Structure formats: structure tokens, C-alpha cells
Amino acid sequence: MKNFFLWAVAISALCSSCENADEQLVENNNSLRTKTTVQSRTVNAFIVYTNVVNSFIYNYNETHDTNLIRYQNHVNNIVPSGSGTEVIDFTQLYVLENANNSIIEQFNYTTETKTAIIAILNNTFTTDMLATITNSQEYDLVNTLYAIQQEGNGNNDDYWKQKRSIAFAYGAQYNLTKAILYAGAVDLKKHTF
Image (cartoon, rainbow, N blue to C red; front, side):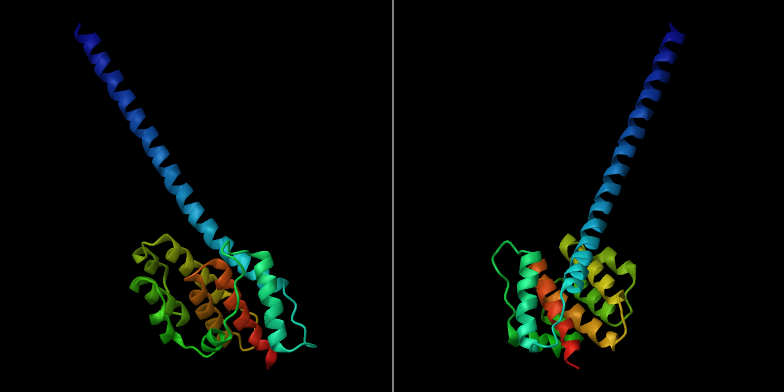
């Protein structure tokens, strides 16, 4: 009887440990799946942004304003916002083209996100800063801005990277379409020099 009881305890312990291992495996898989989804959304926002901007051809035979209207239509055709056509507010665009890092304080983000955005603009960003950002949309935004800031192609690009990033952060307060619309519109300004 003692042997039977000991075997029963041993089998119960073995089953219990297998159950815990299975739960841990499921938990690890769910965590990995969540992390992959977040990274996928972030990469997708950056890829959509670069594809939209790179697929627009600036026409030097037309005025800059005409190119901006063409770009606006281009963005709305490729990245619909779901709330109708997004329109460039030229007054706001002028503000963004001439903005510096201090404008970030006016944006509707948490303090931690604003700090991370400013760090990206100042090239002092570290991935440790992501741990303080609890809002998933803001987390994705910071990752996307970091990717935009790392992208470069000469032509006084440090200046334009900063303006693009500020414009993207401004538009992202509303939706991805507006973020791409303003960041790309700021980027088009380099064609006027």
C-alpha cells in the first residue's frame, strides 16, 4: 500500500510539473506573439511611410503647391484614414517646416513619450526608454520615429530628418494617414532648394 501511495504521489508530481511546463510554454509563446505583433505594426508603419513617400514623383515642371496637392491625393489613395480625405493645412505645414524640438511639448502624448521623441531628435535615444512607455500606440510611434530618424540619403538630410520626424509625430496624434501626409509634405520641401 505504501508503494502504491508513493507511486501515486510521484505520478501526481510529474503530471503537475508537466502542466506547469506547458503553462509556461504557452505563456512564453503568447509573450513572443505579442512582441512580434508590436514589432510588426511598427515596421509596417515605417514601411508604409517609406513606400508612400518613395512612390511619389515630384514634378519639377509644376509649382510646389501643386506637387503638395498631388501628394495629398497620392497619400489618400494609398492610405485611406477611414474618416474621409485628409487635407494638408498649409498653415500647420508651415509651422512644422519651421519647428524645432520644443513643439513636441505641445503634442498630445504622455511625458515619457515626449521625452523619448525629443531624445530621438537629439540622437540620445536608448531602447531603455521604451520600458517607460505604457501606451501601445505611443510605443509604436516611438519605434517608427526611431526608424525614420535612422533613415538617410544625404542632401542636408539631418535637417530634414528632424522636420519629418516632428511632422510624423504631429500627424500621428490623429491617424497614420495624417502622419504620412505631413511627414511627406515636409520632406517634399527639400525639392524647392
